Length: 363
Image (cartoon, one colour):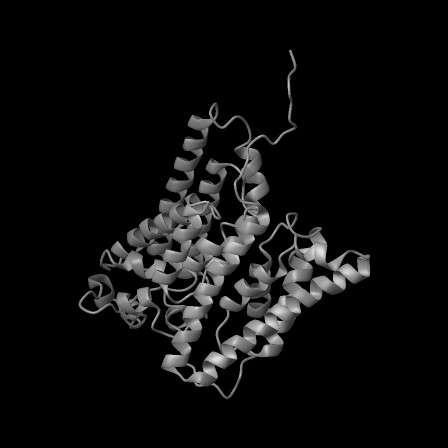
């Protein structure tokens, strides 16, 4: 009797890495297309042209950096590009930026994101940090003031409430606690309506404004198995629960949690960055813990740190924790299911306790 053996892995995915990255790229371009149309209709064609030019600069710098890397190491450029996908990092980084960012700042940050965020680790599949998140952190640290002076822009909703413990003056829902506290009432900041945030009819980071578009694209990518649905669902669900707990302690309505989902880069980060299979754990339980950790850090950074947003740094911090989570969740997933659920429960309790402590500290 003849036996046929095949080497591991034995699991077969119908889509190749190239097809997965192609569909991811198309999803990102849909989000970018919405942004271009919005700026063209709301501010004029010159803003739409600028968005296209920013994307072109980032793509050229990203692809160019990897091409120079190939020349320096005497690699075949075409073969390298087909397995490295530098344009994905460039597109994500561009979508994380406001339209008034300077071409110089975006170009330099793209080069550094590709080089320090991916190539120095060995290239695609070996990087520890999400390269686009590295690039955005560089912009935060070094190029915050590098903006175009000829554009008419205003503070984004996220920036407007930064430093005020994310207390929103939602119509007819001002907190009783805040109304009786001078330190709290002065911190209330008017917020856009939920409909505006869901549709994305306001200026902000080019790819992070429309919750509806991002959710629809994310659902399509999840159905196509391009991304793991557990990550965005766990992250968004955890952030909503924790934000609701925080808001209730200040008398905010139940819809307060939705503001945390719709404002800033929560949805964009959940769909396009936290789902990066290279920089998060491989097991399902590990990814759930990873997403919960991102949500907890997002809320804590938003309400306690002197930063306008917490999604970016929560991703980078949890990227560092991915190897530890992977080791913690190591083993046969069926045999360790009870242990894994206990760990998930412990992380959830820690998140609620941390949220309550943050609220008490801000009262």
